[in-house]
Length: 265
Image (cartoon, rainbow, N blue to C red; front, side, top):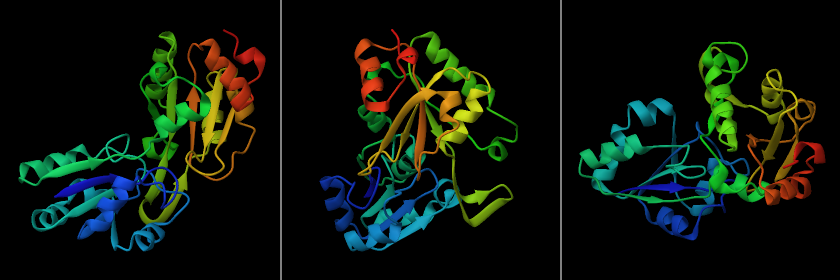
C-alpha cells in the first residue's frame, strides 16, 4: 500500500486525525519539501511528533527515480508526505499512476490547501476563482520580469470576472547556480506585487501570509502599495481579484483593510 498524506499548512499538528492515524501505522515514510513546506515545524519535528522516521526526497528522487519508494510499497505500508494536499498544487499523480502500473494499492488522505485557506481568510468565494498561476523567480524561468503566461492567466480570469491565485515561487535544493542542497528561498508578496505593479500598479491585490498558522495575515491594497510593505515570515501568496460580489467587497474591507475606492462594485 502507498498512502499519500497531506500534512496541512503549518506545523506537525495540521495533519487530519485520519492522516495522523495512517502515518503512525505505516512501516516507511517519505516526504518531499520542494513544492511547499510546513513553516511552523521542521520535518524532524513532524517525525518526532508522530514517532516515525521520515526520509526526505528531492525532486529527482520523486519524479525521476521513485523505484525504491515503489519497491518498498510492494512489500509494506508506505506513506508519501507533502505539505498541503498531495494531489492539489503539490501534484503527485505520476507517482500514484506508477504504483498502479505495478499493482500497488494506493489511497489519498487529504490535507488543507492554500487555495481553500485563501478563500476562507479573504472572504472571496471559492467558486469565483479561475485558473491559478505561479510567479517564478527570474533565474528560474530564464527571463526578466513577469512571464507572459502569468499575465495572460490574470487577464483571462479578470475578463471573466474571476479571481486569480498567484502562487509564489519556492526554491529548495536548487538555486541560481543549479543544484544546491543548502539553498532555500521563498518569494515574498511584496516582491511579487512589485513585479506585477510594473504592468498594472493600481490593480487591487490581496496578500495572504502564513495561512494555517496562529497569526495569518491578510492585506488588500493596490499592487503598487503592497510592493512597499513587508509581510513577515513565509509562506506568502497573492490574489488578484476579479469582479467583486458585494459580500466579497465588504469582506476585503473588514478582513483585509482594503481601501474603499478599490473595492467598489
